[in-house]
Length: 477
Image (cartoon, rainbow, N blue to C red; front, side, top):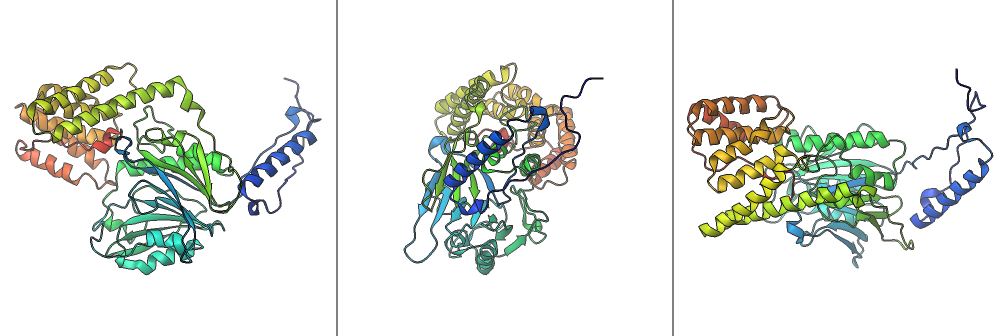
């Protein structure tokens, strides 16, 4: 039996807290915390390492961590952080978004009220004329979550744009409103002291109007929840950036994860500290860079939240190379689809095809083979190479293919089989498509695909385009 390495058989626990810690500016908080750690280290120095444990705990204040997923249009849509100082009595506020978007994607005001807007796919999505914009008004006037909820409820059915709006304030309160034109706003109140939210409705009132109950949204929300659970009890702004970068369980960077390639705005907000940190790196690696702090109060220099160590690794660089080639292929492919000149059209598809062929041949694969198979098949289809397009979709039939890639791949193969006069194979694939969709009853985004498959069982499809959603390739265009 090994000799014990420590002398203690019972434990004494000392808790040390900094009085009024949250009342200090963030720079002062960092200095006080560093000084406390220095004093503790000096005090416990005589103790053997095996005889002591030092645990740092979070302060219990509210945090918002947010990845806003949207294409950056090849760099033409950069993230922007704007500081507003109204001269009409409204509250000063910070808003992160992108150029020409007048709504805050993530925001914080001088009273410590913060909000985060998510896209709500519903009908109607937008009121084309008139309507109210509580999305901005809440930042201009609200001092608490209850104030923010009231601003949205007062807008009611007159709201101009559908949204999910998560809220937090300096007291630690949190909440969520789900709003649609002609339908007003419903309030979702989490049962615990935290929640994660993606792009599907949570309230009973809005569930019937939700058009985006998708594998993508469910997977991102589950990823956020799992990442937060691992960090509970130690959540800090720095730890929040690790959650925003989370790709746990994903073999490929173009998988559906929290830190996915579509992230345009990555931000952490600490309402009680009055600080909004925004990532300094851009798509497709936005969450992984350092985060710069912005505040409306004079706080001196706000310490950056550090970049992820893997950002400078050779493996990450190789991933970025593959992603850039995929983006070039998508750009060539989408441009080709818009061209009227047949020679120019073929040239665009041929350029895309060469890049996709190169990526598909890599061993080991750097991007998900089933996802890029969708785009590769579309390029081949654009060149009129139906047999090659059919073969390119084989990875979509793999058991571990993502749900949406498998659904679209099966339906595309069925359509191509009909075009190639392989009716028996087409029937097998149409049946496989329907069986696969039946395995995901929680999803409602595959209605058109189901209709296509049901019609395909009755007669060979006349559809000319492959039923592929570009979002499901997993690479922003």
